Image 1 (cartoon, rainbow, N blue to C red):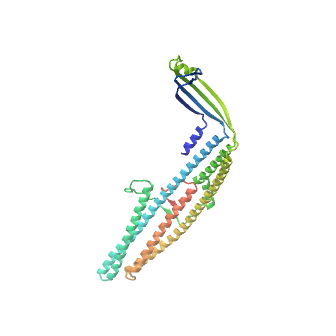
Image 2 (cartoon, rainbow, N blue to C red; image 1 turned 120 degrees about the vertical axis):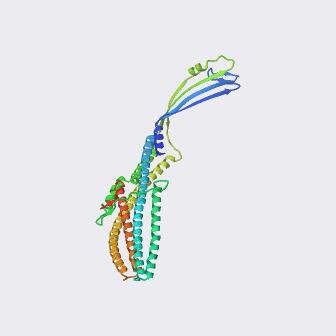
Image 3 (tube, helix red, strand yellow; image 1 turned 135 degrees about the horizontal axis):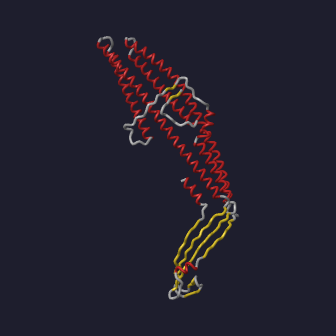
Length: 399
């Protein structure tokens, strides 16, 4: 629609040409336009007309309209790019959610396998009379709970696949599988750059900033258009006409001869001088000035919002990295604690309750580490996006 508006504003520079044709009957006393003689008979007349007008000058309103529409078209393209960027980030987030859920499913599967192995060991101990049957029942109950948790996580994985395929507008997630990249988040990783540096880059490249700047330029041309209404306008008119008449029982020239002999041409120039129009021109100028101010405020607001978004993403990335590093330590400690607890359980030094508590703590630490890892990855990709770097998730490596 904005492209059409721009094309139309360019076409408005061309002359207007319109045609007219009529066939009239005059009854009673009628004037024959060919002979300028009155007759008391029915006169049939045909009129043919071509005419139009060309704007010579109107305060540069046509030119400024073209410029305004040009900037609005460019702004529309940037708005479209912003939508495309949002879609890209949404797809990336949905993709990373699948990766996270895959890891959580794997962690739950590992936990369940450990429990199933422990059930077999405990059953042998019970059969040998070395362990109470209550221990076996407690571990079997734990396995049942872990199966429920695993089913829940697998359902979440299926839902995350559904979300991604819907974003990609695929008919069904059936048979759809993602590529799992090699992921390595070094504990010595740092969030590069700083907020001001990233904002400086983003302010030059982000489509929402460009769109606001272009819309400001368009509003300034709107003001010029409004001011142009104060200027006198000049236009050139051009006409061509001919006619034919017929009166029964009177000798008349042929149709072709009359059209040829009755041709007339006209050319004129006119000036329109705005003097007073109910204060409409001044009111339009005042409104256009306010629109320029609003566009300036909108640009500043867009910049402030971009700065806040970068600030939030940067802070989230730093926090996620800290959380990841802490969770790595927690996982290492939980794994060591679980190995020690498992050894004690195998020799009957602790109860199944203590054993299950240690295993649950390990799963919790692993889940928190996975969540922190993918949150860090996503936030760093968002920051790269703000830096003007293309979004690429083929291989995710953060060092």
